[in-house]
Length: 204
Image 1 (cartoon, rainbow, N blue to C red):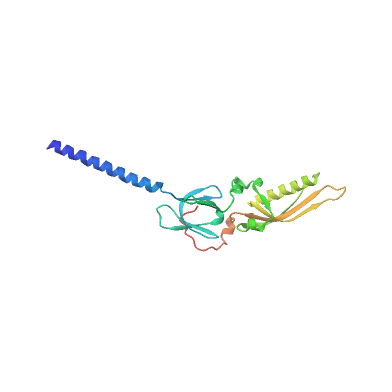
Image 2 (tube, rainbow, N blue to C red; image 1 turned 90 degrees about the vertical axis):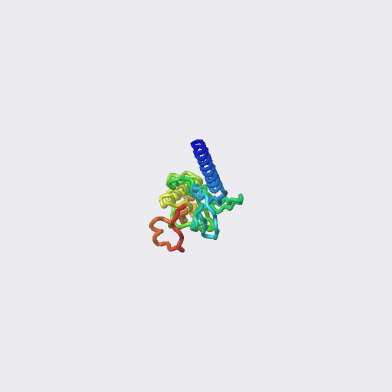
């Protein structure tokens, strides 16, 4: 009798272990199944299931969750889908530098480059009086403009006017003005922005 009981215990233990291995294997398969991957312009990466892409928003689900969440398309660099397809939306380079360093600010004269960005305000700059050549004057004014844009937490300047000053016998000068733009609205601007209702359970 004792021997029979001992054998039953061994068989029961073996069955429990095998059952546990089976469940763990199934869980591992679930966790390892392919996902779509969202890459934000700031460098963050999120494995999700993308459900819809529009001109302004990207809708997605988190793994094993039924809720649908939304992120603005201008915050996304690219999506790599589970089937290998890649869709690129925005350049990440200018957002890779922290703390709004002025070297990261770039200038453009194309309005389409800032079509999906937030306006910070108008800005202008003149070259330093000590500039000794037209090239040095232009560089001086550009750097001053970049630094002022960085102080406004901007990342792009849409140039609206350029002007070279100084004639024969005068020190060369350079004047430049434009409109500063950023990828995100400022905190005080967020309060006045009305958007269509989004699920806020997850912040990417």
